Image 1 (cartoon, one colour):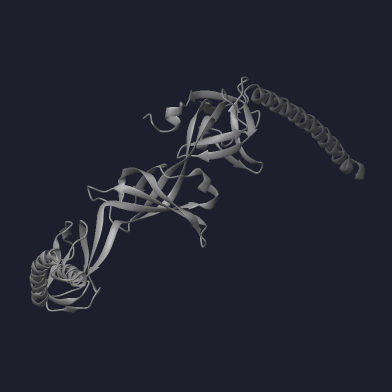
Image 2 (cartoon, rainbow, N blue to C red; image 1 turned 30 degrees about the vertical axis):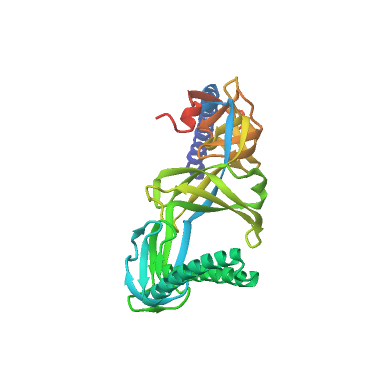
Length: 374
């Protein structure tokens, strides 16, 4: 009885073992099949390697103008504070703040009654001394008076002339006139004021031309001289460029910022430029002949330093370390690492690695790189 119960269990175990063994063989066959498929797929991927589409810039030699850009500020070409030499009581004012004045124009008048009387008296005295000297000449020629008396007559007429000159000057100075053409920017006087000698009554500035001041850094001063060309753009007038030349360079440096003051005279006949506005001066520093230039966007900053990628003849990317020089808005000078004739990759280079396959889809010309072709 016991035998009959145990036997089916043994047989069932044997069947299970056989089934399990069969299943294992099937699984091993499936794994082997999967490995073969994966290997085939890898082989297919190797046959179709990654190719990066790029655009290139064919490098040529060209002349490169290296500019230095400096902040500038504007001051009037001329500016004067005007007052009365001898002072006086103000009787009339002919201009207001903001008025344009011409050279010689009367700005104010003072009470000149006493000065006019002194002037008239000096004139009369000179006329009298002229007549006295003429009589003295005749008397001296006839021997009637001595040489000392004749010399006394000379002294009197000379004194009369000097007195008239002083009286005339004081009388003229009672009227304040503009010494230059310009704009009145300050008025500090009213009718009835009694002004002291030299007290400022008006400020007049000449802005038909303006002085633009720029500080040239000490390390660049040997490259600059009077006559260097300058292109100036002001923040308040962004759409206009003012071209001029350096008119003056200070022979001494500012000890605080180590710069040399440069003055540039700029024509302002249309009066667009106002004193005090800020801007930038672009000054020609140096001209490099046969310079190797590439678009700035070709440059990549890496852990190795600055690099660019060049398209090789075998349609692979070649990594180059470069030394750079001066730049403008779109192009940068390459001192070493790139040669004329190289095709520098300017688009698609950011994720490239050395030796990677590339497909050139287009070329940039110098005009396109500089943005002069739409």
